[in-house]
Image (tube, rainbow, N blue to C red; front, side, top):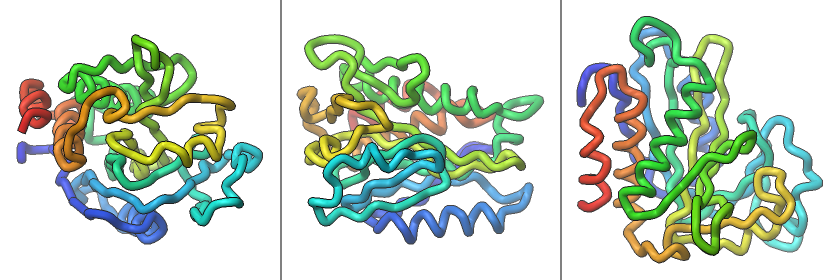
Length: 231
């Protein structure tokens, strides 16, 4: 690991609420010298609500035995489940830009670019949509479908938690039980539906590599992203 790169912690499959509590505890306890970390996890089915989420976007959740958890991240309601890469970014933004603080908007842009790079490594085109954080399919019959979601908490001291999720090979039906990210009728998709059948662990490592590449003050080779996608 190069200097200033986040450490990677692999949590395997873990329930959402204990991981949420652990993120807050880590952030509460960290000091200016605490190394940044990326936590890679796969969650059992769970719906999570952002701070300003409208519960009216929970359409038919009550008919299914999936927990709903209130969080302190930004954004609306989303779904996490098996077959989805989730990476939580426990970062101190003050140390992640040479010469000064990395601002929240820049941070979001770098995370989104990491997802776009990973999708490109698997020959999928992803794009941003103005005013709607996350990554969407850029072309073809599924253009506009959401494939990755983003929700963050940035404390006043510049420390962050929560993170990004990328749909790899999921049961997508729970997304129809909500208005994903608060958008009625928003289509969601995963990599498998787009014709990319790849082990979850491969995409976990590829996305972690891409995030480190974009977020480290000592940049690694962008070729590592494509290499991680093919290993």
